Image 1 (tube, one colour):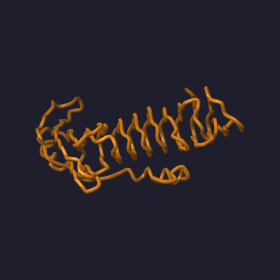
Image 2 (cartoon, rainbow, N blue to C red):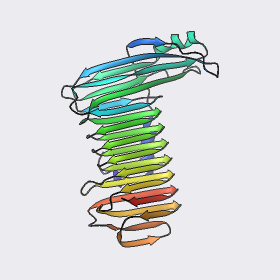
Image 3 (cartoon, helix red, strand yellow):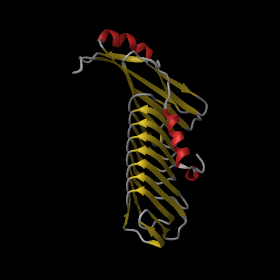
Image 4 (cartoon, rainbow, N blue to C red):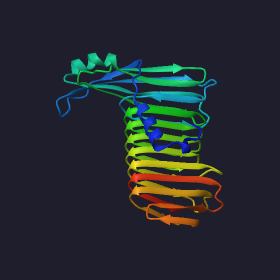
Length: 290
């Protein structure tokens, strides 16, 4: 995405609404019938797995509905591995097993990307459907993750990472490419991130540890929640933090030419080459230098 830092909060929140999808499925390796759970519903689970040779693709894209997704980059990988479980919870084991055919995982091996999509009926008759995904892919690929309900973890990638979720937590670790995250309800954790960063969150907290690239941008906003940022003390950037209802705290940093009010802090870190913009409506902003 380009010029994400210039987008208004209303436009950012509009983007979050695009997270809901209905998608597709695949070949089973085995069926497991766990015992009936305490609320007297039975769960049937079926595993799946794929191994795809890497050709000229450079992007992995996934669209889920319900269930956790984890993606890990593997240096020098010549294959992409996808595995997990499809699960249906229903009033009986027989009904859950029969309904499992309506929950699919569809994998498309294209010229530029590998695309994975969950497909299920819009109306499930009270049944709960879930697909758990595990992905291991080349660490220099781009990753695009969209999910409705479920956590997303992306680890050890040098390519761009984009994530859009409605309900769930997002964790991004050791990412050196540009990052874009849109989340409605949940928490966002960034650790050892070194690329340009754009975060738009409605309800939840942001906890980000990052190193700004030369002349890079960090743009993070929340409606209801705390924005926490840890950056090196030698970071060079124009700095702006703003709250509506809340407080701003900065420690371990020297802010030159600072203009401070009870609701905003503006100034320059070191040479001011990059840009850091932090906003929250209801919550606090906490910035620490390390």
